[in-house]
Structure formats: C-alpha cells, structure tokens
Image (cartoon, rainbow, N blue to C red; front, top):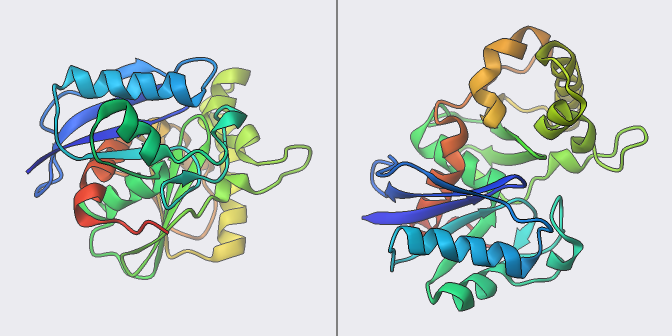
Length: 249
C-alpha cells in the first residue's frame, strides 16, 4: 500500500510516497520552504501543494512540530502563535479534501525508527531526539509510543526552552562549529539523562547525518546512536502512522 507522508519543519515542509509494508520511500522527497510567517493558512497551502505535486488521493500522514492532542495543536512551538488551539487535521482535510492523521513530528520520526530502523526490537525506554529548528523528542517504552514527550521545552538559564540554545537552528544562527555546538547538545542530553534515565537515545533530523562531527562531545553514560533513516524518518513515520493508527491522545 502506498501512502503519502508529510514532515512539517520550521524551515521546510517535505513529502514523499512511502511503501507501508517495508517503510521505504518510493519517491524522492519534495520540499517547499516553510512560509513566513508560519501561520495556519499559509502552511496549509504549502501542504496542499505537496499533495498536488504527487497527484495523491489517499490517506495522508503528517508529522507536526509541536504538541498534537486528538488532532489539535496544544502549543505553537516554533510556529506562529495563531496555531494554538487549531484542529490541524480538520484544517488540512478541508484544504485538500483528504483524510489526514497528524501526530507530533518527533513521534513520527521515532515511530519509523522503532519499526523500520535501528530502534527495531529495542526494549526499555528509548528516546528519539530530532535535531532541527527545535529539539523534538519521541519516547517509546518496550516499543510503545508515549506521545508528546517534548524534552526540548525544558527551561535553561535565560532561555524559556533549551532548544533555543541547543537546537540545530542555534548552531546555524550563531555560526557555531560542531565542536562548540556539540558541547551545548551534550548539556541538553545530560538533562534528558538526569530526568528520565533512558536506556537508549537515537538521534534523527538534519544533524544526525553529521553525527561523527560531534560524537566526541557526547559524554553521557546512556548509549547515543544516529538513526539510519536520518532526516527521512519523519516522512516515513508520518505515512505509516495513518495506517498503523499511532495513538491520538
């Protein structure tokens, strides 16, 4: 079965067709820059354009970069404040005429990694960290998703959330080397380890493909490994979520 997966990010919105059985992408990903400002109507228009690009008529899975509960945005995250309280599924269904399943983007990436990637068969508490505009996190206990586990929202010093200081966007914005940024990211992981004591941390998102550049700066005891699916995990996980019925809670 072929499904369309869409991964909504702070800098880009990507989509691709995915084979639901194998979890493999059947097409190259199609990317459109996230509009500014990141308002509901503008972003919904971009998502509709991605659907049109693939001439797709079936169910759509969408990974969204903030807390989603029963299809509703519960925090604007790094998006426009007007997203708060918007039923994202209803908005996208109205815009495209298609059936949408919307889940947190890090949950989507983790869902793909736990079913098709390096997390498959891993027991205990496994956390997927997606490094991008923010720091998304998806948590799994014995393979079962714990939705909306947003560790990037932890306050840190003068920052109301640590992702403003330690995400990939902070590295780009401040022109940091991987050496300097890696120290910041390790600080974030130290908090993760202290608060939830995971058995394994898997890194996804754009920076995961460059893991070797900052690997030496990771000093925590918890094993940390990159996701084989890299920044495709969000698309794959979103696509299969609408088939496998990842929890909407």
